[in-house]
Length: 350
Length: 179
Image (cartoon, rainbow over all chains, first blue to last red; front, side, top):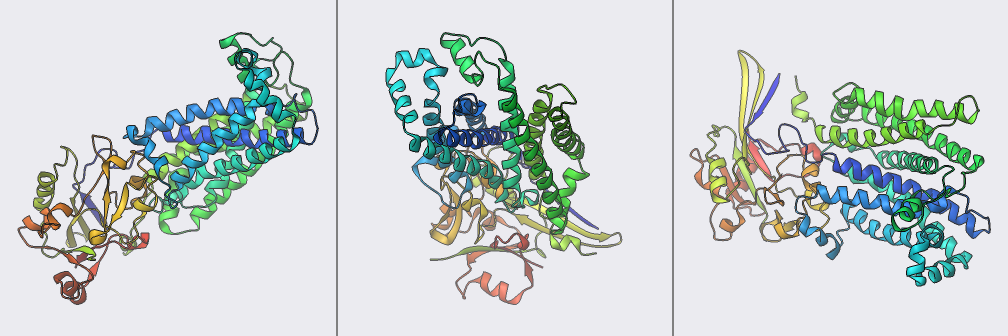
């Protein structure tokens, strides 16, 4: 038997590491949604560049919605910083070995691309703003009139979206000290989970204003801009179904990646197996199996399959479940990850 | 340039915590926190027992994960002595270094920045030993240059059995425990 006692008693370090609370999971979750929306928005932009009329696609409105969501994520990130008056220090240097530095610079580019992408639909979405600032209208016309610019924006959204989605996983992945995070599948897992959550967010946004006229004015206009994918019009049935079909694909991929993560950890060292046990049979097992795997992935998968087969009525309930599962996945990975630790080889001696 | 390291004789350490108090006094460590601490490892079952008492702190690793993950360069390897240090007004309090450290040697100072053992570099620059080393009543701690073949720590590591903490983490720690 081995018993180790320590006199250390630092706040949020002992008895288990709890330096990251709800802020980082929320930031990773919203980062994932934004990444997913950028990928789908990018695909819509590429179709627009090819000459298709994509105004009816929900994804055409995603840059603006993604931009606003990202601000909430960044607010959560700022709340997590404990020395936040010095946050600007990140942008006076580039530490290439730090994933967080890469992520911070990536987010600056993401902000820029989202804003330029949002310009395409801004005159329709925010008529009051383009009346006040006619230059925005001119910029919008300049972009819309040049398919090659739209194609560049489409690719930028696509590539940055995939990069952002993977980054949210890689951020944790690089920390050797926490075995639960030491699987490279975490990046792709967070990406597909983000894609799925991005589709769910668009789905919910599309359903909220269904059949209602878009409000006017500064506040009402801003609100409708968020949900404008349909504006006064209904989303077309086939577009809603296209979203569902995308989501089915992402949910299946998520299930596969979760399985790979668990297999990967269980077949690695004792430290990794112990870390995996935290979520499969330990204190996080109920939330992991119940909320993430069953309620967040399996149930929406079956439910949406039935919706696609016209067996049940179409609702936003599966989308809400996907969002709940997506946040819980990140919360579990961040919390249980901090709890996981390297098991000393010497402690395994009889 | 020296490469500072510490050698701790676990056969002499009695866990009196003098080093802990000396560090807190010397470095104005805020109340309720510690940069160094005592770990006691008991092995076996009664009456067949063995015990190792050791004083632990930041290992000033040769391959420090806290430095490579820092987005601002606040956590860095100081040229003097090749030690790991934190510049408070560059730290944003993201806590990535805390999550990256397998020894949990860091904490958030109540003022917001991340804090940890500095090997008392301010004392070492004046030619003194770190506070913890200088007060140890059993003289179980040795501080010196790992690259100097004439240093006491070099001789101890060449002649005594020793181990480091979590070598499997790949951090190449520079605090060695004689057994």
